[in-house]
Length: 130
Image (cartoon, rainbow, N blue to C red; front, side):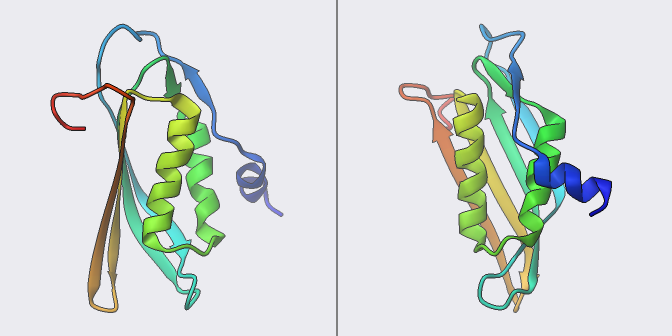
């Protein structure tokens, strides 16, 4: 196994402290090379994943996010499951005030799929978006 594959296999999502937890501010990540495998055909599915969140006390550490996302490349899952799993894992990690994950999947079989999943902390409404 080459060093990159080893890094991906051993990686875990990590959080770091938010230096400004008193303030609402927005963080956006765009991940244009997401892949997973169709559980029915085993053909690869390609997507751009967008993560938008308002942190509370913790932030997502970027290198750990990169390695985490690369773990999906050999996993069989439907588009909806991938997006919801990413949201669930990130919410469990950083407990944000608000988070939205969108999977913009490439056309396959003449169908374009866009999946959006959201989370808002109890009682939190960022500018009416929740």
